[in-house]
Image 1 (cartoon, helix red, strand yellow):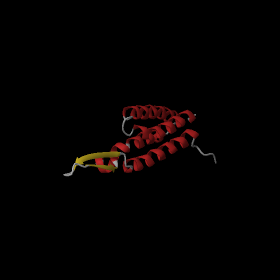
Image 2: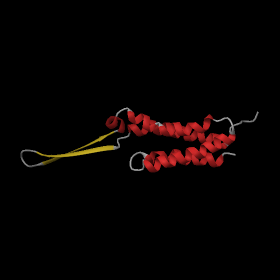
Image 3: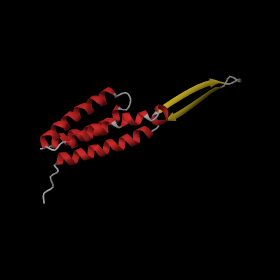
Length: 126
C-alpha cells in the first residue's frame, strides 16, 4: 500500500510541531528584563535586575498570541486536494513572513523556524 502523504505534507507536519513547541516554550523564557536603581541613606546606589517570562509579565493573553503561528501552520493540512494544500502552504508562508517582520522587535524571531519549515513544505509539495 502506498502512503498518500507527500513530502510537503510531512514538512508541513514538522512545521506544525515546531510551532507548537515554540508556542509552549517562548512564553516561559525569561525574555523581559527590568532594572531599577535606588540610592540608600548612605548615598550608595543599589541596582536590582529582574528577569521575567512573557507569561509572568503579560499574563495568559500571550499564549493566544504565541499560538497564532500554530493555527497558520495547521491550516494547509485541512485541505483534501494537493493543489489546495500547496496553495495554502504558500499563503501560510507569506502570512508567517509578514508576522515575523511585523513582530521582529519582539517575538517575531521565534516565528522564523516555522516560516522556514513552511517554505520547505511549500517547495516540496507536488
